[in-house]
View 1 (spheres, rainbow, N blue to C red):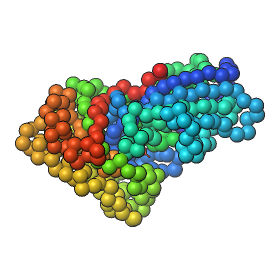
View 2 (cartoon, protein in one colour):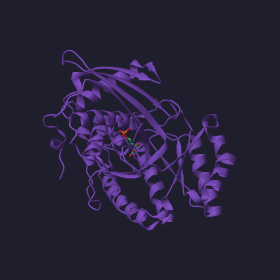
View 3 (tube, rainbow, N blue to C red):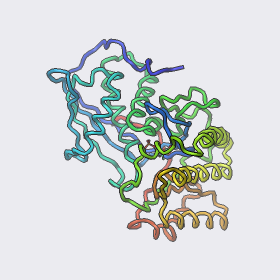
Length: 360
Ligand code: PMV
């Protein structure tokens, strides 16, 4: 089994003075949710997600050898302008990953980052952002060690991304990614995300995710605080077991293409995530009245039409509407005619299953 030690490099064979890379990394949406973690960003339960295609972060990393190597040195630009308030997160990330990338203090970095989705849309940019930064850093490590295998490159990018933001480790590869040890998923690990190893049924090809922006405000609960709520939570242990069971079920569903069963697990997972927050101490209600309106309308539409559309939620009020490509027109009609009225400024984002980080 791969351990943390496997990500500590031995001596580099090459050197490089300066350079520039640019990568994009997508967001992802969990089907079986990660909620609760142990030390060092180890998940309390395994999770599985669809990698998205359109919602992504584009990050360039310029680097140049500097004098002395006592400190991390970097500038952080968001959409081309300095963004001081992002810096502490990057500083912390560098501290966490330094032992795995011992060259970090030797360079000055200029990180320039932008998202394809609107800022403060309530879509977490930490997953795509950390994945994009991690993979850029791996491009630099690969120049220092050109013998590195492609497999190690992507595995370590995911490993590093996880140390930035847990679910970011599911944003390096596509199109379905598992993170966390699970006895039915070959190669699965708590340390990094792996591509779903079995063949995925045609029904899930180009699966659609339309994100309805119900509330674009600041997150009520940061995910760090949220994960902490699972410590000493009355239902935590049973929840972690349930995630294992649901992952087994989703595995069989992705293979068989059974959309009715898919809907049951995915919606139940979304509501369970929120149930954990409703029943923690302190407790939170992260849905808004419009979230519930949308859910009820999706259910009504599904009952009336038999169209296999369902919803999932992150730790917030926005609704991800999931459906197969062959019912796209009908579901978009529903969204335009009925659901946009419940979105802030009628905003929604059309996305679909995608294939992971790309070098630009
Ligand atoms: O990666 P974090 O620490 O922001 O946690 C994300 C947790 C959820 O989005 C709520 C669920 C998941 O598995 O993505």
